[in-house]
Image (tube, rainbow, N blue to C red):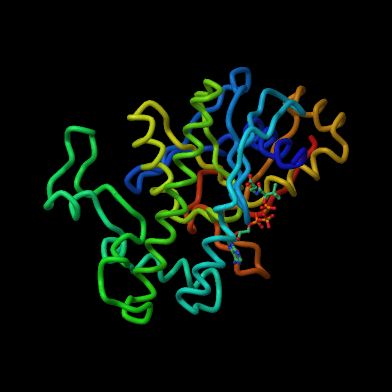
Amino acid sequence: MDCLVAGANFLLKAVRQEAFTYIDGVKEFVQIDHNDLYPYLLVNIGSGVSMIKVDGDGLFERVSGTSIGGGTFWGLGNLLTKCKSFDELLELSHRGNHRVIDMLVGDIYGGMDYSKVGLPSRAIASSFGKAISEDKELDDYKPEDIARSLLRMISNNIGQISYLNALRFGLKRIFFGGFFIRGQSYTMDTISVAVNFWSKGEAKAMFLRHEGFLGAMGAFVSYDKQRLDDLLAKESLQLQVSTSPPVDTDYQSPLNGESIENETINCIIHTA
Ligand SMILES: Nc1ncnc2c1ncn2[C@@H]1O[C@H](COP(=O)(O)OP(=O)(O)OP(=O)(O)O)[C@@H](O)[C@H]1O
Ligand SMILES: CC(C)(CO)[C@@H](O)C(=O)NCCC(=O)O
C-alpha cells in the first residue's frame, strides 16, 4: 500500500495530464496544483477495493474498502456468463442492456419517477431484481445483459462507498485507480454517475491515466526516493508517458489509442 500511494503521489505531481474526469463520454484533464494536492481519497480497484485517505508523501490511512471489486466482476461474471477472459466479459458488458435484469424505479412506480424522494424512473431500484419476478432460468438471459448489470452493480457500489468516505473525511477529491478500470468508458462513466448522484453534483470522480501501475511506479520511485525528490525539486526530471500499448502485451491503453500532444511511448525517466 505504501508503494500504491507513493505511485499515485508521484504521478499526480510529475505527469502533467495524469488525472481526468469522464462524464458522458467526455474526458477532461484536471490540472493538479502540486501545493494543493492533499488531502485526497485514493480508491484502488483491484481484486478488492481499498479506500485510502492520503495526506502527504508517506502519510496515509486506509479508511475503508470493499470486497466487492474487480475480482467479483471477473469471478461472478465468469460463473454467470461462462466467458473465457476478462476482456471477453468486458466486451460482453458493452453490448448488453442492464434494464433486462435490473429492477428500475420505474418498474416499481408504473414507469414514473419517484420524485418525492428524488429518484428518477431510470435509477436502479434493485440490481438483478428483475430476475426474481420472472419465470426465467439463467440460460434465458443473454450473457451480455448479465455482464452489463454486473459491471453496473459493482461500479455503482464502489462509486457510492467512495463518495460516502470522501464525505466522512471532508475530502474534495477522489481519484480512482487499479487495474479493474483499464480506461474502460462504461466503467468510468458508471463510477462518475454514481459519485455525481450520491453527492448531488457536489463531487466528481477523477481517474488516473496510469491507473493499473500505481504500485509498480511507487516501488520504482521509492527505490531511490531521495534522489527522485531532489530531481523533482529541481524540475530537471521529465516523465514521458505512454499512450500506446507496450509491444509485447495485450494491455489496452487507458486512452484507447488517443494521443496527447508531445507525449511519447513508454514510461521513460530522463534525469537531465
Ligand atoms: N486482462 C485481465 N485479466 C484479469 N483481470 C483483469 C484484466 N484486466 C483487468 N482486470 C481486472 O483487474 C483485477 C485485478 O486487478 P489488480 O491486479 O490491480 O488486483 P490485485 O493486485 O490482485 O488486487 P488487490 O488490490 O485486491 O490486492 C481483476 O480482478 C479484474 O477485475
Ligand atoms: C486485501 C487487499 C488490501 C489486498 O490488496 C484488497 O484486496 C482489499 O482492499 N480488499 C477489500 C477488503 C475489505 O475492505 O473488505
